[in-house]
Image (cartoon, rainbow, N blue to C red):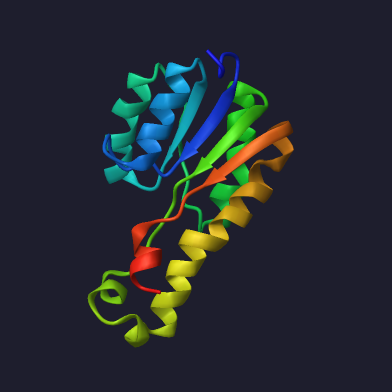
Length: 151
């Protein structure tokens, strides 16, 4: 049980088929205690049962593009779990219209939204949780097929 005693935050679980779910399961199976985030009420309904599957009552609303959410997430986690050992950043988004046409036809607005949500959020999330991340803690982020397919 190499993760026994470790605590982590999983950001971006969409359902039980998502890569983030597989990572959460592997960490849990190795003894980790987990907390999860959800973007909105629709996703909350999916994430809460997943959290329960991993014996976790720690589920927080987090829109990575909302500074108020980012400013408060560390305090909420600290209150419930104390310091954490790792963060999984599995967040990606692009407006539908950006995926329907050639990459070269992507509008600046759609590109900015995709980069803000999928890329820059790693930096803003890391800054937000750094005060509660243990020394030598880990941050894992993912890349997606869309990044390869469209570039």
